[in-house]
Amino acid sequence: MYDIIIIGAGPAGISASLYAKRANMKTVVIYKGTSNLERSTKIENYYGFPKGIDGKSLYNNGIKQAQNLGVELKTSEVTGIEYIQGGFNVKTLQDEYSGKSVIIATGNKKITPNIKEIKEFEGKGISYCAICDGFFYKGKKVAVIGNGEFAYSEAKTLSNVAGEIIILTNGEKATSINNEFEVNSKKIKEIAGKEKVQKVIFEDSTETNIDGIFVALGEAGANDFAKTLGIITENDNIKVNENMETNVKGIYACGNITGGLLQVNKAVFEGAKAGLSAVEYVKSIENLM
Figure 1 (cartoon, rainbow, N blue to C red):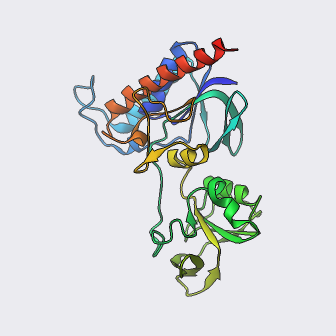
Figure 2: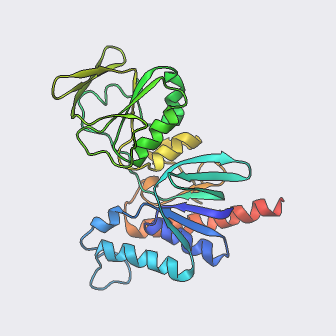
Figure 3: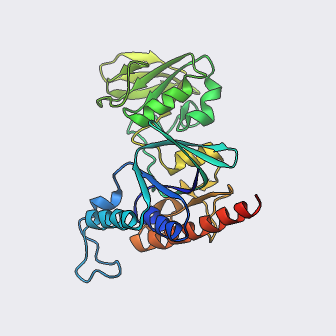
């Protein structure tokens, strides 16, 4: 079991890992391998770079720094977090990692597809969390909108309760999805129904009746984890206190997902704070053993 599991390898996650490792905590960073930071062509307002630095270099430098310190890094997509006795279980499609504490530093990755009427049906048949709302569709036909590992993971979760599952890729090529589920790659025109979702209409005018739709685009993000764990959010941001603690003991959040100033310096500070707080938490529970 790890002492601290960090999800995300951007400035917040890497900063947290440095402080955790220096405190002799058994630490692992799990990340998909991409970051919004990489899209920044030049950063000129971060300390220590008189000529600025491009985002990709800063991102890669952070990962190298953690590796040089001996931080364990795993390139994999996290699909969920669950409670276990003595801590938490972080799941990827390939592996599972148990830890005494978790730091969420994935940024805010909630993606809503540009489909007519989807916003209007949120809470009326449109959900973003299979483990939260799957129970309401016991024995019914549901669809998952997505084309990758996150969509497949949500479909797997729903397979325990739903009667029929279809994955809708909305015109995208399906990846990491095997023949276990029906896949429809048609472009979606709109979602229709009266008081709740009743059907999906495609651009070729064909349609399929449906009882519920679960949106799982891209990869699982901080809000997806928050919903499954009962973490309080506000305006799509995870609520934390001054020590980056969420309302769930042992779970911390830092970086863009906490809102406020979306800057590297803020993410680095919050990562350091989260790392130190997680260290103190792990020490406190070990003293009780």
